[in-house]
Image 1 (cartoon, rainbow, N blue to C red):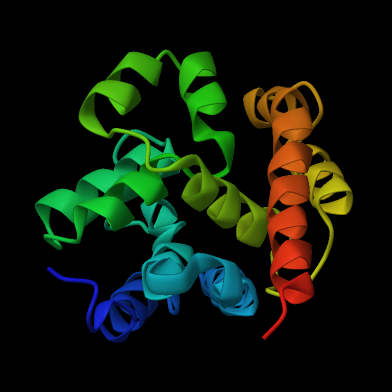
Image 2 (image 1 turned 180 degrees about the horizontal axis):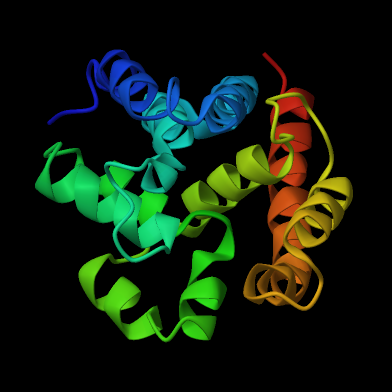
Length: 190
């Protein structure tokens, strides 16, 4: 699949998997896609790719998709095997928001990294930025509040709580790199 029409393909797929079964997750995914549109100036030709990955990033939570309980891996496998998605979208979903750290905690890091190569760092940063600057209800937030919300929702001593605290420095660094790129784009003369 080429990136032409990628967003037109991605939205109905994500909606079919999330809107009824997990409406809050669907609202979050729409918000993450909205954040992706706001950073389109730094993505150039990859803007549609990012928006598609953003709206699809959490489909691994869908009851019809969840197999291992690790949503980045489940979502990526579904996108590759059932949806025959663009491989770059598949790999962005697999690695969104520092998922390698959670994969490591679950004993799945080798599986994740063997099956799904990481994409360019600026794309991984962009998807992390979009996800970690969006509340569970799809509204804008900041990464510090988002990390605190996740840790609070799952519990500080849970696997997710421990993972998100471990990932926090990288989440903040990703956000910083995206904001720096946005600032330099704004400063460029037209």
